[in-house]
Length: 270
Image (cartoon, rainbow, N blue to C red; front, top):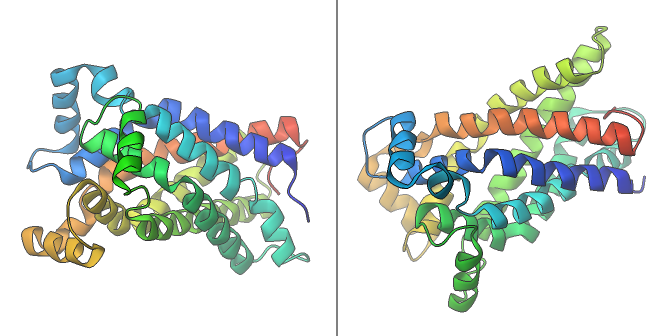
């Protein structure tokens, strides 16, 4: 089954809209993961706002590159998902087809968007200019555009397959039991997807932030140094801000996507 242009457009619009609303959560999450502090994430975020103001502290850093990155990834992984899933299992939706479709789309989307994600993390963590464009130019000059791409793609593929499989499975389960397909169902399934995603990717996410923002010569050295300095708990540090990021992100992603798809394609995700 060929991808529907309406699906791609709805997905790309979703990626842009979600980041315009949630970039502050990404900024707090990334900075908190590498901060040498014992205060909680809410106190940390409040201190950042007091230091620089809401816009300069949290909303504008990396905004342009983050929008580009998520427009690409959503356009690929969500836009291609129904077509991939139905091509893999044309007779009936299966968990395996859902998982594989999310994995393929996530790996492809995050590979394409890797430079933009790298620049975004540097803009967040190092405060390397607003919007992320200066960070993008700098990693281009340094030749580090694809630093950490393997881990980023693994994180993105894991996130994509976990999120889409959980959402699609939960939605199918509820619809089979007579629940109406509409915004209320989309919100409930999105919450389930956000919990699954945050738990699945937090070790990859915190490691990626340390590696891309630090100076470790290799990923293995980065992991070793993280463990030596902080112990095993470092690999789940930031679960709460990560989930706080994915909760509204997942809800907004699927609610916006489902409504945009309904307008452009004529139906919700089946």
